[in-house]
Length: 393
Image (tube, rainbow, N blue to C red; front, side):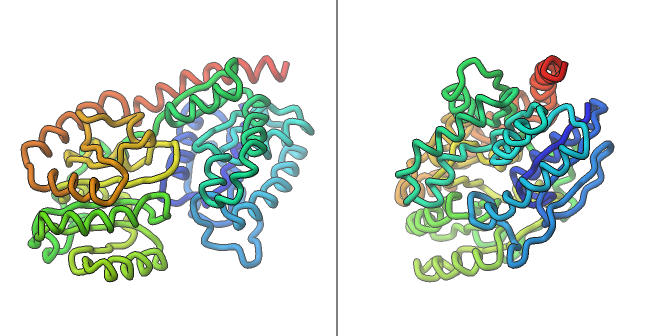
């Protein structure tokens, strides 16, 4: 098949959705499909057999496009809409694979070209927009209706978690829905002792280490983490918090917050690190933390956390509990004091950490490896390819 994939974000960047898109592209390549990828003007080129990357033209004043809904993304989506229509007029595609809000672009392209599309739902757009701009809450019914139209007109919906599967089925109970969770990024055979991703010796000498890895967008709950860690230090004064990732402006903002809380000497911001360093970094922590506050999808980091051999602490919200339970992670209420107390308990209890880490690793190796993801994706695409063939007949 000749497939057009629409990826409305910088590609490639080493973060959640772009990593998932790369995995889908690699999967489609192994099936022998020819794929044209239309993405934003930002990002690194990657070499994937059978895949050609097309980028929208640069937009004056639009750069450093961040995750989540923004007016920068709206401007990029408008240009992507134009480029998508141009591409479907010039090429004969059998299928469009549309990621996130690109499903609306694909629906318009289907109206003018007849090419069916898959809605790759990595998040609920209606919920995401209201979370980013609360004043849009009045328009939530309209936003949900638009989302339902994108679902109903699609050939099928690909989701990354149970909560989004429920959203899709709520819009159209008869629609074929596949669920392919993200998978661990820790490859088997990684050498964690080769010095890559080594924490500074000064940090390693301080005491037990809690670590967060990921971007520093507000929905990730970094404010909650810092406020909670203030409570942790009251019980475990020797503890350190290591934060890996984030843009320079975000790091500066949270350094100022940590300073205001009086905890900056115990908080270490390491900035972004290559994925190759992830195994070494995770292995040196005593606890890995996911304090996320918003969103339905499970953070991609969770799967690598579970696979790391290090205990995990996470907020007791559906974004986590659709994958985690009290056997595989230490779950806490999304408030500073419970998070801080839970982190102190876990940092102080070695046998509990070992028990949680062992159960977590066993769990992720059964359900959330790249091989498991490819099997689930193959089952979904078998159905989509058959439906696309009938739609084009």
